[in-house]
Image (spheres, rainbow, N blue to C red):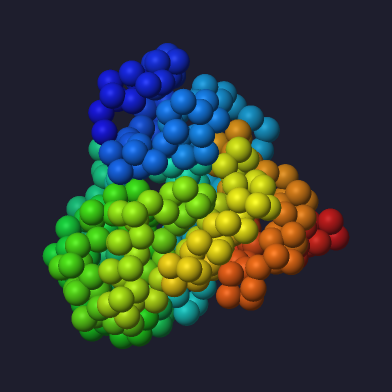
Length: 316
């Protein structure tokens, strides 16, 4: 959706849009904007995708690599934190650029996608590192063409990778991307697990429901990751409604992430002690299949850990 169309409903954004866009792209799909309550200045869906002046101001705790991806990148476009699994960044492009994104300092620019030689090296590493599981990430891996996606999965399979995970926000931000051809291609290459990203129950519109149903009906397991975000879902009633809505759609709540402290997203950060209290309240109200793990990805690159364990470790 074009900038002028959004600014007609949110003219106050004009002053920060260009400056924010230079640091991290501002893009909103029509499907997403149709779910926004434009009359609500605090709309949680608008808050996730529209720029704010706070992005342009330095804050205490800002990190350019908040989860240690760079220190765990043996070759470009690869992150390798655990012996049994490897993560591939297929692209830096997304359909919507979430303003809290932990990779916002790796914004698209001159090199949005790996060149053929860089991708050959990335795939050679992924198939030769001894991992049994590959995670396709980005950017958004569904921002690439089906042919490239399928070729990547086939090459990983030929290289001994047993399980593929596809981490994508596209079924939620751009649900028309979940075509019959995409679903059939993924199902034919199983086991492929699809991990989507929903933060608020209002993101689950009819077109998103249809996209999720196409994936599940094809036998593809679908999990959800959420991020705990101030002004979006830092409320136990919202978290309960989200978990229950996902389970009704046959999507398993998998992770609730502590917001990674990347430069530019300070306005979204929730104190982790408050997050623990919210997570405990959530678990008290939903069944086991509806209760995600509350985790943090520390900046040392060691990988995800339960927030309660991380807080205990930090106080030793």
